[in-house]
Length: 327
Image (cartoon, rainbow, N blue to C red; front, side, top):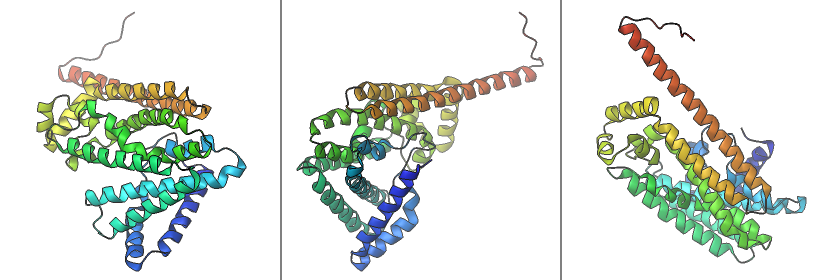
């Protein structure tokens, strides 16, 4: 659920984007309007039913805390949003979820807008922050797409690419640190953000196993649930894939193993957070850990119910009745 502050920020960002698009040539303005009308709900994707807001939205405010810095904070978050839209638009064009070629120029214009705003506030570090993050994300997006479309899917060992894909999510925090002459903390913040990004994407992967597979991709969660390259090849068949994954989740606890891996990354993020100068980073990691543990517990109870239900049905079929436990 969004906070009042998030809702107000979203309204402000949308108004600034409208002003930006009004200044564009007609073709670009019309393409942007159509795209936002058709894809607006999924432009900046949030993990399903997340109990905590995305860290890219909160982190700059951990550093820019005073009333006098509020205008700078909103500028940086607007620029961050423009940067994320740039990546999202180009990604949609690659996936053919959007087909209007004018959107290439819309995305480029958003990138220029983000760069311009970051340059106003980052004390000469904008090029190193933005350029490095965008390049890292673009290269990683290409690598992830290649691996997920391969016959065996994306292996668990490649999950570090998820941190690289999310490099652009840390730009506003980096600019905030530069603004405060604390840019030397940015490398530590990136390590913190990397583990959170991997954990968050693993949860997304688990939720999106079937949706991604239907589009020709076996993500990390799918590869972990399937269990072997040989079976991964066979899992290109929808019926076989669904039966195998359902069995892995219901009776073998494979999804809980994935959550254990997710929690391990959250723990690493928490350890790194203690080296940062803001307590909110540690609190954020703890909140995400609680969410993961709650999900794991719910998943465990569901799996136990399935197993006990199957056992009860088996005993009925075999002509027996569940007896009373004697103590």
